[in-house]
Length: 295
Image (cartoon, one colour):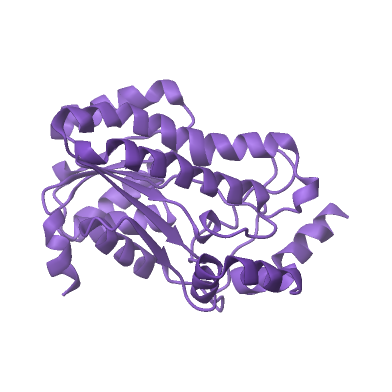
């Protein structure tokens, strides 16, 4: 049944950023199974080639998977990368803005440079690439923009102030775009995953510029599997869902609680130790290890 739904994507040209690992990598596999033509971007070309190889193993034609190495913050390279895709496939139907970086930090200790760096990667890189692609979509009066946000784009997540702000910013940018260009055939899907298995903790920013959190997730963590998240994301794309949330309870419960009863939710968070929320998010108190590093 899943792949009957995804058959509507067969033959579409999809550009995925952040495709070398995590959700982007597994989304590539889900789409490759149903005959999508893929352009894969990230900084690490060797990892992109590995993903391309696996796409071919599960049925993709070699010519249907194009590796386009790209640092999302290298704005002067966006047009060149897009032209490479158009030259190879002749078109682009869907842009998946998936590149991004997480964070673990105490709000009051975050250096301003960390805020700037995260906005460059999580927001401005995605906006710049979208503005490169959008004229092509507008010209043909058709196109689908997919944005990987987060449950942090809907909630005030503790100990990730800069990251949470970047995800809220994405909603602002793309909801504005949705309203402005809805009559021009532009579709927008904003995906809000909760805790998902990936290497995002290892590469997460902290409160200090240039440092990384450097911890791995544990197999016992209460997280959605990367494959399942990618499957649900692919279904949302195929059905042109405007916004979807992907998470286990109690995260999903809190999403609805905050959405429909915002005042009582805020009163609730005021009496709950914020580190208990971190245990729901990371299945342990990850801030304890960060605080130890600081001392």
